Image (cartoon, rainbow, N blue to C red; front, side, top):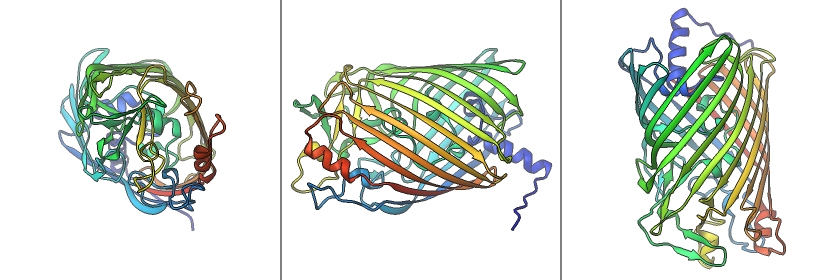
Length: 441
């Protein structure tokens, strides 16, 4: 059956405003789309999206702990099931222009994910809340809860994601969980890591921090240069401040615009970025540094043979988290059931991701991704290497609604041998199927 969808001029205008407000652009300047409201936006507008999701793994048990399924074979954020359905994200956003120079965005998150999982309980929360002042040419000022300058994969709007599951390097190195810095923690001296229970996890930050950011973009023919620099607080609304020192973040990017404008433009873009903070824990402040580069090429959104290619490389030092191998269970030692946090600056991690996509028809896109994450190469006994091949297929009903499905071939490497406990977990790692509908309004 041939799919037919017609837009009137008003429909196009509404879609453009909502895509920018959500933000849902396919290839665009994320500082522009997330930092300010469209010029034709009213004083008050409402939009949002919902993501019903399905996950399936075989739930293979660990060979040594035969009663238990490792968390890598369970579905976040609760890690109680290997096959389940949930609403991953459910977001309501209010956005508008107070005057031609002042815009605002206020958004709440109601899905089941790391942001709303606080101390192991469901707690909806504020995900966006900022005001942008555009009085000074070349220096817009954004204040509030801001998506910090970062890797392209951490700044993208959710409608542009091609897979349900994020790449491992983004998920583990950039999506920061917040820990209760006011509590005392046990230091595992054998590996020089703190043991942190799930009850002390105050939720992930969604790549956002409270702060002030200076940013703008400049066009010269098809070229576009963009900068963003932020000073903020390491913390979230749910966690409060978790550091006595400022967070610093910056990104520079250059784009060559191949055609189109607004949310669906085609471009070739490259960026470099840097983040630094000193999270606190157990009465000490620890250095956390992240930096990287990324390149993307996108052309022909929702056109047959439209294509995209993305690459990003990320390095990190200090404050490296290793999620618990198992959920809490009688008989298992704390290092197996609690997160191990490696705070010192000598602790390293790095990874990269390569992703491609091709529109087979106007509505069907095929995708392929490979991601690699090398955690703690400085610590041979704790080094782990995550590799994932993902194949995906997406069906776009229109620019605001799509269904995507993906299959993930996952491996976990343990370079240091012998290591019977780690090997038993590595050998048990499942492949995964995930499917999701993205419905925007």
